[in-house]
Amino acid sequence: MKSYFIFTIVLTVAYLVYYAVIIVQDLYGKKGNGKPEEEVFDLGAPEDEQSVYVTESDTGFNVGNEKYETDVAPTASPAPQETETADNNGEIAVAEKLKRLKAQAEEQMEETETYLSDAYTADELYKAMLAKGKTGNRPELVWKPLKDRL
Image 1 (cartoon, helix red, strand yellow):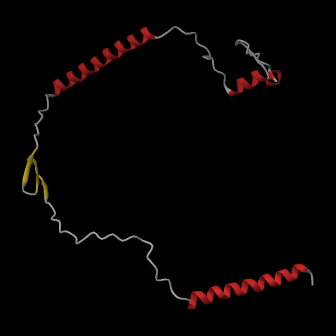
Image 2 (cartoon, rainbow, N blue to C red):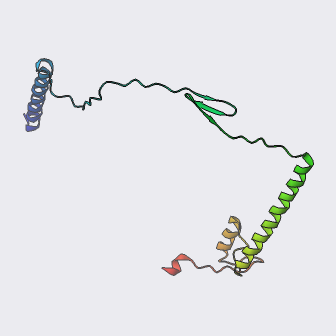
């Protein structure tokens, strides 16, 4: 026999003996009655707690025997004509405030030269790439292929 087959047979017999010993220990060995793995805390006797009854009413609420009142001021609805004028005045005030904020922002802004305001679509850019930056009625693009940089 070759050495491989001898090794395989010896290893198989060793595994069988090992597993047989483990199974016999599990079945007939003494059970571990050691310390439990969890920790136990003694909290003493539980105390009886009384629940508190809470009720709510229009003027407030009650917690147990104590009464708490909340102030609710009734709001009178204005006349419909007053509402329309108030809405118009509010819109006018918002528009004026917006104008003032816009004027303040424009004072703080710098004059800049715009660029890229004439955007190309994907097809136009592809055609410009094929034509090496030359487009019909638009300014010529400066086209620098990547291989020139390397």
